[in-house]
Each structure stands twice: as C-alpha cells, then as structure tokens.
Amino acid sequence: MLSFRRQRLKNLRAEAEQFRRRAAVAAALVALAMIGLAAGYFRLQVLQHEEYRLRSEANRIKPRPIVPARGLIYDRNGRLLADNVPAYRLEIVPEQAGDLDATLRDLAQLVALDEEEIARFHDTRRATRAFRPIPLKLRLTEGELSRLAVNRHRFPGVEVVPYLIRRYPYGELFSHVIGYVGRVDAADLEAMGDSRDSARTHIGKAGIERYYEERLRGEIGYEEVETNVEGRALGVLRRHGARPGTDLHLSVDARLQQAMVDAFEGQHGAAVAVDPRTGEILGMVSLPGYDPNLFVTGISHRDWQALQGPARPLFNRNVLGGFPPGSTIKPFMALAGLELGLRRPEDTTFSTGEFFLPGQSRGYRDWRPGGHGRVDLRESLAQSVNSYYFELAVEMGVDRMDAWFDRFGFGHPTGIDLAGELAGVRPSRDWKRRQLNQPWYPGDTVNAAIGQGYWVTTPLQLAQATAALANGGVRHRLHLVRASQSGFDQPRVPEPQPPGVRVVDDPRHLAPVIDGMVAVVHGPTGTARAIGAGAAYRIAAKTGTVQRTSRRGDERTDPNELPYHLRHQAWTIAFAPADAPTIAVAVLVEHGGSGSRAAAPVARRILDAWLSPPEESPP
Image 1 (tube, one colour):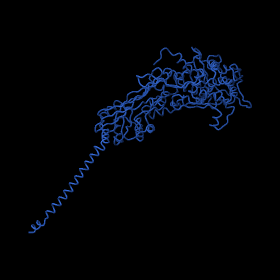
Image 2: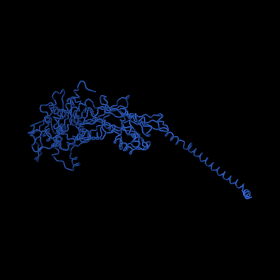
Image 3: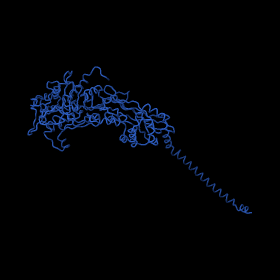
C-alpha cells in the first residue's frame, strides 16, 4: 500500500522537464566547446598558420654553420708557411646534453680529457648561450673517434665535427712573423656576440694571423639540415656556401729566414732585412723563438711555463723591443750636418779622447784612449769617433736634431703590418718635460748625438732608416704582405702601399756618408773591417755598442769580460751592394758586448745569404 502511494506521488512531467533542461545545458556546453575548438583550429590554421609553419620547419630543419677554410700564407717564392689540415673535434650543446657533469664523466671514459680542457669548456659555457655548441676537445685520435661512434646513442647533444686545423710547417722559424691562431676564449666570444662568427673555434692571436684576421678567416656560411624527432640529421636541404679566407703572399724568403737564424749561432737578439727599394721585409727574426703549433689546440700548462723563462721567447724584439741605438745613429747625424749646412765632408775635428762642454769639468769620452787625432766625416764614421758628433750636436742643438730624426721615422711606429708596434723614444726638449718634468741640459744633447741617453729604438725603426739611406733618401713603409689571392683560380693582387717619402733634401749629401759607411768595412781603420774579408761585393755599414754599465773614472773594461747580464748591446746596420743596394739590415745581438765583434759578423752572413746564396738550397 505504501509502495503504491509512492509511485503515485512521482511527478513524471517534472522529471521530463528537468531532463530537457539538463539536455539543453549539455547541448549548449557541447556546442560552446565545438565552437571553441573550431575557433582554436581557425586561429592555429588560419590566423597563425605562418608562425606555426615556421616553427615546425625550425623543429625539422636545423641551420648548421659552415666555417670556411682559413686563408693560407706563403713566402715570396710560394713556400707554404701556414697550412690547414683535417681534424675532428668534440662539441657539446649544453641545453641538449642534460646533466653536464654526468656527461663529462661518461665522456672521460671514452676520450682523454685533462683538467685544462674541462676548465676551458666551463669558462666558455659561462660566456655563451646554452643552445650554441661548445668545443670540449679539439683533436680526437682514431681510437677516440671509434669509441665515440659506437657509443653515440648515449650522449644527446654531443657531436663529433670534422674541420680544418692550422699547421705551421716551419715551426718556430716564423713564429714572430706569422704568429699563431688559438682557441676562441670568453673575451673573444663576448666581442663576437650573437654574430655568425661565434661559430668559430679559432682566432688569430699574434703576428700576421692576428693583424689580417678578418681577411684570413673568410665568411661563415650555413646549411639547412633536415632532422628526425631524435635530432639526427637526415639530409641537407639547402646550402649557403661559406667564403674561404684570403690567401696571403708575404715578402719574406724562407731560405733567407733560416740563414738569419743560423747567422746568430745560438745568440739571442733580433734582425730585420729589408728591400730598400720597396720597403718589403725580406726576413725578420727575433731569437729565441717558439713553436706556434703548441697554441693551436690550446697550450698546456707545462708548455706555457717553459716559455716564461728569462730568455722571453714570446717577446718579439723587433716590434716591442726598445733599445738605445748607440753609434748606429752616427751616419744620420753626419748627414744632418751636411743637410743643415753645418759641415762639409772635408771639415775636421780633433779628437783628444775626451770632449768637454764649455764651463763643465765632466768629460765625454771617445772609445779609444788618447783619441783618434784629426778626423773628417769619412774617418769619423770609419773609426766611430764620438768627439766629432759631440761637437756637431752642440752646434746643431737638440731642436734641430729632433726635427731631423723625425724625418727618418724615429719615435714613430714604422707602420708594419703587425699589431702592437712600439713607437720608441726620440729624445727632445718637449719629450723630457712631458715625461720627466725636467729641463733639457747640454749634456743630454751630447749623449743623444751618439745614440745614448734617453734614446729608445726598435730594430724595425733602424732597418727602415737604414733602407732610406740606401734608397737615395726615400723612406718606404715597411710591410710583410706582398700580394693576396681570393681563390686558387684567381690571380694574385699586389698589396697597395703608400708612396715613398723623400727625407733627404739633397741626395748628393748621401755620397760622403755612404763612403764613410763603406770605410767601416773596407777601409784600413774601419771598426768592422774584419767582416769585409773575401766579400764579393761592397758593404756599407755602421756598428754600435750600447753600454749597460757605467765606467768608473778612467777605467777601461773589455765588454766581453763583463758578466753576461751586464754586457753591452751590440748593433750593426748595413746595406749592399753599396753602389746599388738590394738589401738593408739591422742586427741586434743581446749582451753581445761589441757591435763589431758580435753583430757585424751576423750582418755579413745575412748579406751573403741574400747576395751570394749557395747553388743548391733546401726548399
């Protein structure tokens, strides 16, 4: 009875109405969902079609940089001085590699990794974006390549990349000319920013490699690589080729360069050989040198420490080494006397062995006790008579001296195509006031007349000035690059050079000066007459000895008997053949003791190598 009542109380109409309402709401919600879904598809497929198409392509197609081959470097005869050889490097993309520490630990089981390589990797990682590949090891062995190939699937974000690596066939022979390339460091990456160049692993660090970096490195290209969902390359869709670096042909001669090193016979120093007619560097050495191949893949700590000794093999003495020129300055002083009308070639000075300024008791000595007697311009150069130049300098005055030596480029970089060239010091009244806040004294003028005192010159500056004497008073900019070539099928293009600058007003004044320099070697009283024996050509030269310790009173000491570190610096400048010069040299022998004994024989060997080469020379 109770059950029957309950059934009768059920309101079917109300339930049906409730169902209809719920169905309508559900239908409305479904309709809204469908409309929303359709709107979403419309937005994705119509409004944002291009954006997502590009994203899809970006996921499927990866741009891969193509680093071009670095330009080659040759000597004047086509000998290869800097080459590219194939190698393989190991790279990691940090954002794809996951746990980097674990990845590095596992890789160390397959590849020999030292602490320096790992530290360098982390330094570079901190300076670059996580999506960029970072080199871990730059040269893999065959065994390492095989192990990595077998285990490739274990290392996402790790790639073995083939590339060309720099090689210097002549080792340390051209270390201070060619320089070297080294691994890109954090500072290099910061300078590159997000440019394509950040894909490079190496950059020029010294020498020609650094100065001509932009021309040697070429222009990076890229290829569009199709990949699968795992990131594996399936093929190359499009390729935008890289532009290879420019090949450089230098003016240096590899045979002469080796002869210059041999001429020093193990002594430390520097030498520059120049073609006076053009300013081309024929050879340039700074000794000791170093092996630039050590730097290409990252120099080890042990090798770096070995280069930090007192001999300073990394120090380029020609570009950065500043030394007083000593008596090598005398031919320029003699020429100044003629040009300024203060002397004639036949005018004489009487040398007593000591020169005194008016009103002073301090004497300025000649190198020969008792003096040289009466000498003219020719003998003042042949015997290197200080008194002649002391007297001339007092008459000339420091201001005219300063202006005269400025003509020859002293106190300025020569403009050679190497970075960081030292300007040196051309002593003057203004320079001393500016640098030392002191007045100029007559004694300073006397010292400057013989290349002592405040003088600082580089072998390059002396070579340039000597070449101007040999070239009839026309000074050329020194340079190393003779021509360039944009491809093996392209012609060589001569490197443009500025015209020479005339520094001697009357070239007739050069004849007596050159005659005096010839007498240095071929005259009976010449300080370097020993090197003239057996010469098949005439040599014009001037030696110089720069004191590193003062004499006490009348004490005279053989410079070769002094301790090595106190021995005088030995200079010689020369050119030959004297009547039609094709080569001019400046030679510095560190701690050589005497210009005539140490540096002059080196100069003679260099001249012989150029003017009287052996019939058969190694390539």
